[in-house]
Amino acid sequence: MRRVAVIGVGVTKFGKHDRTSAELFAEAAVEALTDAELPASAVQALYYGNVVGGETEKQLHTGPQAASVLGIPTVPTTRFETACASSHAAFRHAVMDIASGTSDVVLVGGAERVLNVTTEESTEYFAYASDARWEQTLGLTFPGVFALVARAHMARHGTTEAQMAAVAVKNHKHGTLNPKAQFQKEITVEQVLKSAMVADPLKLYDCCPFTDGGAAVVLASEEVARKARRPIWVLASAAASDWMLIGDKRDLSRVPATERAAAAAYRQAGLGPSDVDVVELHDCFTIAEIVATEGLGLFEPGAGGVAAERGWTSLGGKIPVNPSGGLKAKGHPIGATGAAQIAEIVTQLRGAADRRQVEGAKVGLTHTLGGNTATVLVSLFGRD
Amino acid sequence: MTEPALTQRRFFEKAGEGQLTAIRCGHCGELAIPPREFCPSCSHRRWEPVGLSGEGTIASYTIIRVAPRAHAGDVPYAIAAVQMKEGVSMLGRVVDVPLARLAVGLPVRFRPLVSSGGHTAVGFGPA
Image (cartoon, rainbow over all chains, first blue to last red):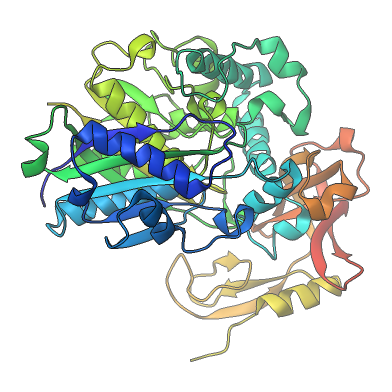
């Protein structure tokens, strides 16, 4: 298998946009190709993530649409849908495309448009990622799924609402250092605890926002990457799945797919959790960050809440998590999120993250979770 | 090809009549909620339907306050993951239990929730 590198990254401003998801992706892709110093004609394939285009934009076949708007209509294009992990799943397949020798330069990315519909509509569309007959009929929502995880974690480990709030406070603080973040305002633990209840025990400030945005990364074979200015090597990219129904998950305080994907990624790279210097992980809800830090092996099971509260995951802490602001503050355009996390880790490993730079970062990790914890992707990155 | 031991449609028909039905693997004894072809424990396809008592305890719960459009009129409402006495778990709406009394470990009992359109959802009421 050939080595694969990321040689270009691009991300739109996250927030509300009046452009289509295809246009948002194309903006990010232009930035990524410019960063890679490659013409659009160099791209040999597009792997694309988009989730609720069929609902919010009445648009299927969003892969070729995105490629056409970018101006590369003839490259083979495939759209991936693994709920919120879609563009990270696209990334893993793009890595395999290059590693196998099929392509030398591949564009990966995703985009989402949701702020053109009401919160009630987007809440419904996101719930389509849970089972239609068994769970949607109950009125289960995504905050509801992670509220079940939170309540189980609290019962098992004594995790507190204040510890969950500490994750939101930390990620909002990091978001103030990221000019592309949706929220660039600090908040306090008290504000989180007093915010409106969405799905007990999760409150409004425990939840990431609905977001429009796009992200793109350019992948290249080693031969191409050696000519690039700042290649960042893909050390591993692993996926894991789990039962679809919440009822089939035996211990809701854990996300076994995170544990399995992390174990596979560490094995591929020959690294362990203590080798990782910076992490971008899937904090769709504050409890999701706590459980992910445990599942990735950064902290013991049950210690994730304490770690957040003590600042171990803050910039300057033991292992900085979500220096970009995470999904919580940077925003969560679901089809773009995986690619945006990869863009942040590449920027960190290049030493180009300005005020949010993790000093001396050599190894970075991205973790993206799909829907009801049934899909997880974990990738590892390193610099020369 | 053998017929499935229990289709999803049949599960909900029986649930609507008040009977929760699981499937048990005739090879290794694994208990599961249908529909399922292969046993995840031993990979055999020897399921037999088996009735559940309907008794369980809450493993986790939440109170939904921001709902999808179809359920907006119901808020606030409780959803719980319930561990059934026989070992399998199911998600359901909790009804007739004051929201302040919800707790992990609270005993509950299955009851069918039949919509005006005739569709059954899984519900749990006081034990």
